[in-house]
Image 1: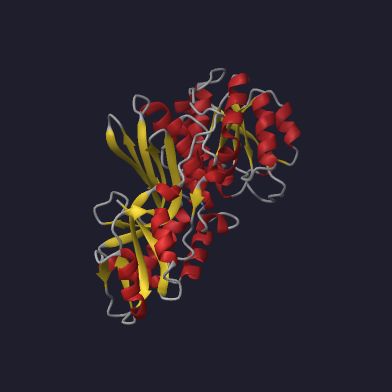
Image 2: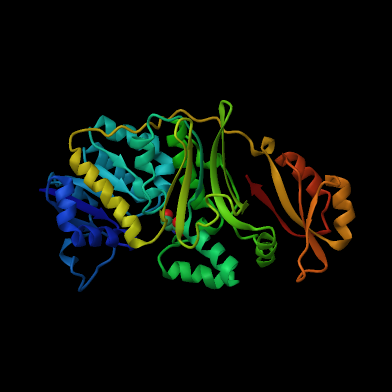
Length: 405
Ligand code: HSE
């Protein structure tokens, strides 16, 4: 029998307990041994909870118990979670986590610690909720050089954008709904400002390059500036607005960024709606493949944590290889990246826009917004666009959006 401890009895932690209990026979069979939850660590009491007797408040008890071989870290954050993970790995106990913040900040160090102590640090649930994406990158696509990863990696923002697009819903009301459904972070700013997606693409980029992609150096823009009228323009152009997290090979550098993008109906990520996430991977031999599923929520995320627990149970005393070195990856500045852009100008700014961007600007008009128009540029660099767009101060009618593809 393998004993387990769950650190943090919140949304994901309680989901882990539920998955292990509900799928007990299947989980045990696939682990090759019976699994038992021995401890649940939380600061709070849970009177009347069926697992009340397993609640402990002292991590030392878990650490000192040699029977405990696997920990599920579902606490979040980089404070106590980091400390407990290091202590557990140093004691030869494997750790399975949903904590993208910690994986993005200390992944290579924790992986090295696990290797040194002949145990494992697994993090399938840290990206894409229930979607298998870490394991495919580590185990399945190993014959590939991954050229690009494009993902919708945050369930909360995709839920908000879809509701705004299809139901004309109010931003604040939809955010509250996402919080109630357990999709949003404790501080939803991490979702809507793109920080959560940034951590996730840092993890995927690191697995793609085998080097450490520092999340603090990834250009990140959230969805807070996207306006209801932007969706009307997008619809008129047969496009959709999605918060994309990208990582692409760019010569000997890597381009990584998070931003809202306009994507057209032919893009594989166009129809990924609601809490669903998808990761579109381009390999140099396989070509394109896509991984799709629920990107947030208690049970999908817990299912991914438990899949790691099963992997750890199958590999007690053995190290599962993961190629993610501490050496820092060289990131390309987004200034040099070329693409098309969409922006809106008031009627009085239309002529100036044509002077700045050239006559080849494509115009989009909405009957509901007679005092302005939308414009699509030809392909140009970010720096070039920013310089010209800056000269339109005072006559723009909203923000600007990047166009992918
Ligand atoms: N807040 C995250 C999201 C949870 O909305 O995707 C899953 O990582």
